[in-house]
Length: 561
Image 1: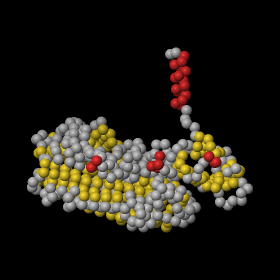
Image 2: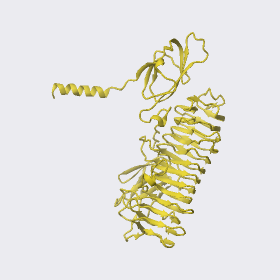
Image 3: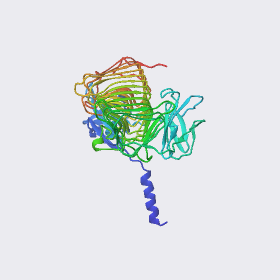
Image 4: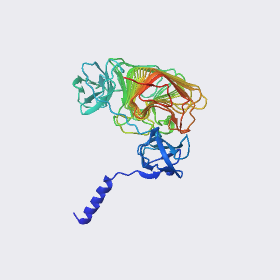
């Protein structure tokens, strides 16, 4: 190797081995209420032409005035006391350092990536497998794994594999796509193995497309292929018998303005998926008043082909598996997995979800001006099962101006919020005995606007391993949040008033008989971007325990083991 090549190589190695040093500055270089995009080393010996007596940073006294290191993304309140000024109140500089990757999406916050839960042992726990007992050999087959008899019966985190495909079972729930012509029949979960027996459907499929002219019932165990748009007019019913397997060609929609009924059973579920495992079918679309989809023990997979234009639904901007206007959706023991779009997008609808799984989609969906009753459901992995950050509105579920009752359910592993009950509309949302876990931003993010009336009542719920457990952000003065008997454990921030938007914050949050413990940054935080100040008038606490004292809320109790 030549001399010059050695020099160039050495210089290349040197440059790429050096870390970028924080910029050096003084207090006079800082601007109150400003954002910065890089770390800083600040000399604090003088300010405004005077010597500095002492400096507090987020309430803690700086020990060495020579150097203040602002290296981490987050909010900093710098209180400067000057010598000889006789002042009782400090000069205040408030600033935010933005994370280079996350920017304003996590304004004022250190970046949060949920930690991965440790794998446990399966022991002698009951395992329930939900899959098609017969399927065409040329398509992939979704397999649902439940630890325990139902979705929310186990807290186990387990390693699993099917052939060469490895996947995780989290909080007792997991799913995997069995590739076409796989030949593999063994599912391994931890130390145990389970036989998966799928018979081949060798007969040609029933071809179904066009507009139905009369009520139609498809017998149990049928193989159905939908190669082009299928329309169900008003007043017409299409029912699908148990154990049927439906393949739909890429981008094809089902227009349902009548009644669509999937009659799966525990032993013979119905499966609906794309005919090509490399692509996605469209979705179910209902626009006539009274359209209804009712499904029990049905697996829906690989929908959401369309994006943009007429399919630019809400925040996700993608087609939904279930799009309906002025309709009804009733799902019982249904499993929605591996969708490239969103799952729900109802407008002025009635929805009832019981024992349902929503896993791996851009978002669980956006519900608009609708009535929702949900019990024992799990929303997880939006859009996937990785720990890579994305800024794509990957919420578990988004509620816009809805009335909802949500019980015994889990919202976890979303790249954005587990539950976003946001926008500017009103509504009444009642949440009981739910779990919000491992969401990059908020476990539950609440907001409203203008002067709408909105109520959130949250009880007996756990918020853990989220960027922020519970957040009340921009809000109407008629927005009330009532929290009773909840736990906020091991989040970045436990309970938050305020958000990353500089919109008006006027709502009120009251927390009672709860605990916010071992959260990495704050157990309770109340700084809102609109004023850059702690808003102590909009939060109250009754019998709430925290890890360390908070001088803004002396009524908070200190937790003692």
